[in-house]
Length: 419
Image (cartoon, rainbow, N blue to C red; front, side, top):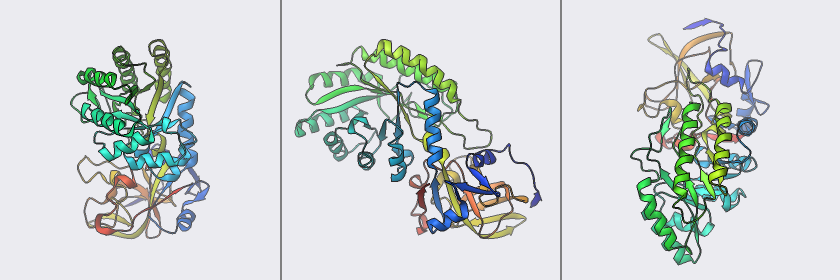
């Protein structure tokens, strides 16, 4: 179904497109028009990440948060090596969630002093590698702490540790909770005393540096984030009273969200930053030696990324238009609706070489896989398009390719590029 040219400037898709440059109704990234970028890469589908937009996100934070706050990038959001190396010049450190991510961080040139390793299921091998590398281990249980101590005895070096705390208060969240209540992440406050005793009894093997409290992710409510950060600081101030040494690192997590769906609003970073100035002042009074760390992944890279697939067929079934692309859920599971497990909503998307278009239509954009779940856009308002055009999915810089079932149906993988 086609319709006359209409103004879509109020739509999330249009807003996301305008973060990039549009020339002659064609999206450009890194100064390169989309069709030429596809030629340069030599294939579709692909993910393209913008250096400029990553820089903008970091600068947005620097503008509003206190200078004394260190920014760490959570590599799990996007472990593409050029992205990691670009961010290594912009942030103070990295957070990793596996030994392989630790290797990526170390290879970027960032000091082990500024790399932290979190995750509830670290293997003995991973703990051994982390102790040897002298990165900071965010300890998630008493069992893990004992294993770290044993490895430190074997290796003859002290392990750098921080306790990851599952807080004993309820957390308001508009996104994904990772703390408060029963969780696999971190240790409950009730276990902290036992952990402190083990650390005190083994000063030559366990070097205590501080605490991590990670309340959750993808939060778009500034008031919820401000409340979570305030409660985290209060808890750490109390725990510091029974710590075996001064708190030198306080990782208050991140959780800064980005808008994915129509109706989502951008996080009010200015309000969060203003509250963080008061938080830093309070921390300086009670935790004078502590470096305060803001750990972010999605917020730094999601807006900088696009997923691009080429339309290879156009068909109409029972009056519904289908645009069939050469990529889909096997590369971008989140945009497809995560295997149908959630109420599906469309990511912002446009026809990249016809952002506005002379005519528009309501269409379904689907991938090439033999499953009805392979949907990139359901009844989306897009420019009229056909074979040879490009579908662009925005907010694709985080949890894209590596968070998707790349091997499903043995289709070719997507390329990645930083421009």
